[in-house]
Image (cartoon, rainbow, N blue to C red):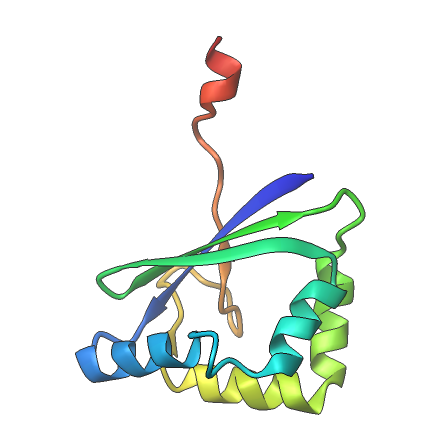
Length: 115
């Protein structure tokens, strides 16, 4: 198992941020979205926020394939509807590639290897 860390910004509007958080509560998130995450082999996912910056931590198995997850998402009408809805709240990081939402972060420190 390994962790992946990704970042994304929200539009800097308190009302939009509150609405984005509401959509991620257990009672509002679409069950198809949770299923698509689990079906892709993502073992755990957590999203943290400070200001309008989001950080997502994903724990994945060794066989996790991000390209296969992207292809499955692209083929799912429901996931595409969710992504369109979430795009109303999100804005790409300034250094994101065209069309890129979540940007992978590079690990620069690991306490476990420090002894």
